[in-house]
Image (cartoon, rainbow, N blue to C red; front, side, top):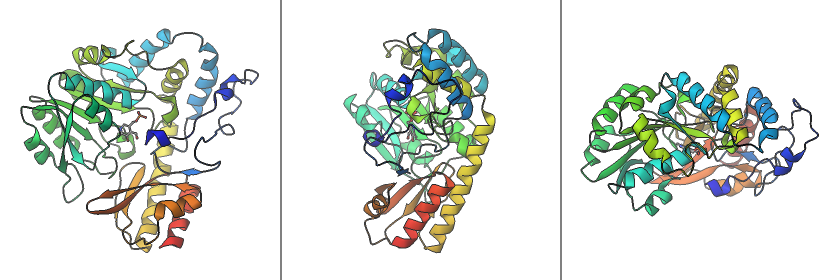
Length: 366
Ligand SMILES: Cc1ncc(COP(=O)(O)O)c(C=O)c1O
């Protein structure tokens, strides 16, 4: 998937040293590498509204400091994140996206045992790396409601289990398990194995974080990212929340603990935490986009899973045409996979205008 993460602000953007601060260079300078210009990118669960205005300003003000290491800014960001979740700075480890945090955790888990327990379907991008650490992955089926079957996962956690991975809300289904049930599961399972809770999408669902539990339990790690609700996927910044001892262990696998983030991404993340109105605005626009899609799916009699995140999984077995190809012909990019014995498409919530285009394209196809 990441190979298809196509685009990024061209380096030349930041080389435009003559730009005055406050100029909105972000609207104009996006360049896709493998997707054509003006592509409607609904395949990577990015936030079409980001970065937030405050993050953009902070990035513009910080890029000229890119000749310096970000040490002086890392501590304050960790402190700010810690205050946000009611934990201490020693409970935080920064990484280049939560992907790095998942990798460090899997590496740590693989030092002792070799089995990971997760669900099918769940977020998988990290699976290849885990396999190269010698981990094998056991997947339990979701419940009839397409949520994690915590009882089945608990049963699969035996003496060989190195790590249990749960993404809540789940990617690709957009469903979630109740936080109290998850808290009880994590507390119990952590007696036997390391429990990894991926909270990439909690903000869209208004779900409580397990941050404070992770801060006090050496065997629970919570991962958060700035890539989703904060709209900073390309800035590559995320973090772990865990017990200080666990944070030290994870950090020991980084050449420079906390140091894989850039001056610009640290500035963007720091400013983003203050931009509450941006977060609320995104959440409400994503909800509107979901309603627009539900409406279309209902009209077309396509089965869908009600989502609590910025994407929806819907069944495309009734679509006789090649949906991916047909969408791409209209410059719209989505993802299709086999799940539950059929074919499903995961569509990310873009802007309302983009979702209207997607819905029109779907209507023309079915
Ligand atoms: C559940 C989940 N976890 C982690 C990630 C990786 O995010 P990051 O950009 O923070 O590496 C994603 C990205 O799609 C995701 O869906």
